[in-house]
Length: 123
Length: 271
Image (cartoon, rainbow over all chains, first blue to last red; front, side, top):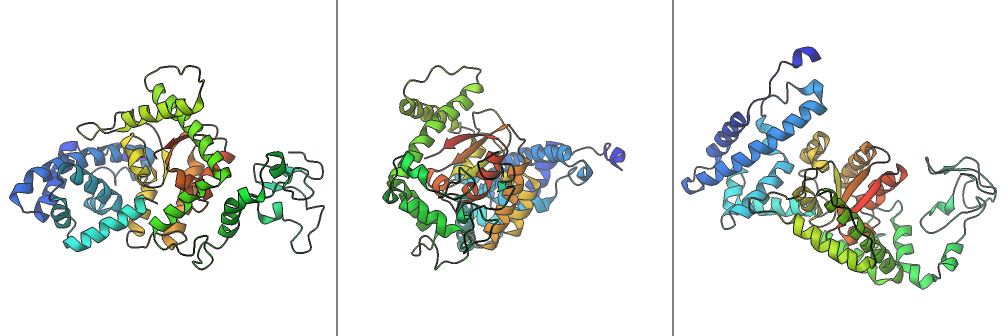
């Protein structure tokens, strides 16, 4: 089983990027935020590529699971933290509307969610 | 460890035999009168507070530390019996525990922490550039200098990239400390698979001291602390308030395990 897994190759950063970009482009259709989605996708593709590479070494039995990006990993609160801090730094004015669109929340819900994450990170 | 009246095993944190001096209100297996933070037992016979006299500490100096450590035991779920009954939000708890520094003992501890930070942080930073540390003459001045160097290096660059080299796992506790650890290129509990799974599980749960989410994270943090190899060194990013807070996961679970495993803790205070 393990020997068979060795032949399973990890997708390239490019494939990660394309998957993430199409995932978020469907959620956020605003034209002026297109560039931001690209920048975010580059950042996340790099982050997940490194993480998947590490996990393939750490968990050899899960090589198949960490061979191509699972979109459910994008819904992890820890990933949300990364997205929020990235968008806040780059996109100060509209970060609430941008994040609420890609997280599929209303703006008020997003602000509440952000507060809860801040509470957790300030623990 | 051999004491006058019985043997003590520091690896398991227990005495090997029963207490030769029996307190009728407690069992014979009890050590330090169930309060190892306040009582000392150098002979193995009876708990004493002689260390206070030796260090010139009076009851008035200790009152805040003693009360907080005593009340914290086993009462984490009860708000009415909390150390700070008026505290409701995290902000309240943070301000409350930060105020502990007003007592002389805590001030001494903070000062010691500053010295540790200075040497630890600067050594950590300089090791990235293969520069040897020089002789330290004034610990406080050195600590201040180290703080400046650390913050200058921790500040993210134009692309949001941390300037420190990528290292292994680190611990964090307190406001902004997780971000400081991540910006410095260290991995945190949330970077592990178990951490991410738990983050998903506790996403909609309330984060407060003693809550179910707190217990789950405390449990995972213990496993994470045990994973650090014995005798190695690890970086910790934390606020002074959370370092003194006996209810923080760092103080209550992670630090004791690391100390027990002889892990060298490099303190990086971010405030």
